Picture 1 (cartoon, rainbow, N blue to C red):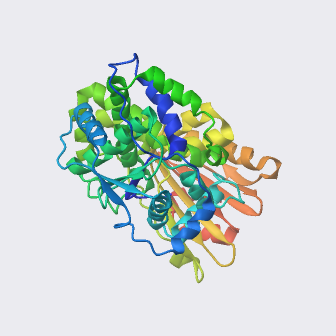
Picture 2: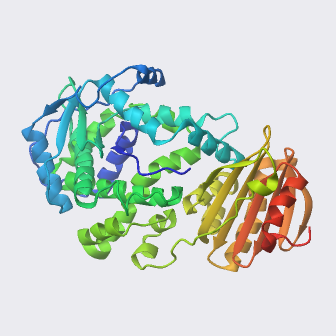
Length: 461
């Protein structure tokens, strides 16, 4: 769950189709009609098997051919005007064979998270029931990202890479390139890989909020670019003609993965639009200097704009030492409002998810790996009010009932806590004021050890 702002900001065409729909939705009217800019991009699908190319030694710094294109420079100037950010340094456009582009792009994704980190994320998501027990998270993410390629901006080399030897591009190619040029301008003015946009202390929800600002800005710029420079009737024709472009991997991915991947584009765009309404492009620029730090702020832009309801820290002890030999905390992160929203919608429906997630105040979640297949999840929330905490306490019981159906049994409970059992695992949840603690444990002795370290949540058991 914990992901930093990736070194390569990419637009894959499985997302590009959704982007075009958003462009057509928001860019009312046909705008001025300019001569289309012909670009060369690729939307050709490829398979996970091509990841075997990672075994090759490829010098991705020298394999590409630097290109100077008046058409690309025209798009760059237009984007600069629309976004109101000067071109500090002309973007470097590079043309590479498609196989090398795939190698470099997917290599960046693989490097972003180690195999151990991805495995830890997978175990936590399975423990929460957010992905199926047989899901291979690394394969799913790789398949989704690699389903289609459209081009990307690299924050390390400052290159915008396009694919060599393709036919003349389209309007969709042009607005996609406008998206990537926006990332280049963002990087020149705000430095995408340094604080406050990139911070080793950020958790997954912090990083998702920052990424939503970055992608949302590129999306709104793309819409304004299309409204100003693109014939939207022709763009609509292209979208209809390309409607059969596969997004099978994304469509078949668990809902949690779908929502997480689309969130920075869709919700990020709504967030940036709200910033623009409140103060124009200067308000967006200020957000890059003082970025949002929770998915809650992205989902409710007024909370960021008004400076209210900041995410709260939730300190949780590392109990591995108390658990004994063989136990280790392998994952610690934050379940943000988006995570809670998807979690409850998956098991309790839309209305319940909105009601529960809307009271989110902060979170720390830990996953402990023990001997054999034993594990513990310690999930600690703070909520806006005690009533919100109560709503979660009651709602979580309903979530577990929906998840396990007749397999869920009550062991013990009172007004402040309950202990349930399902599939040989114990589920404990308690509230104290505006806070709740949930623990998943393999047995009563292990559960009691965890609760002994959290006395505020341990009424008579």
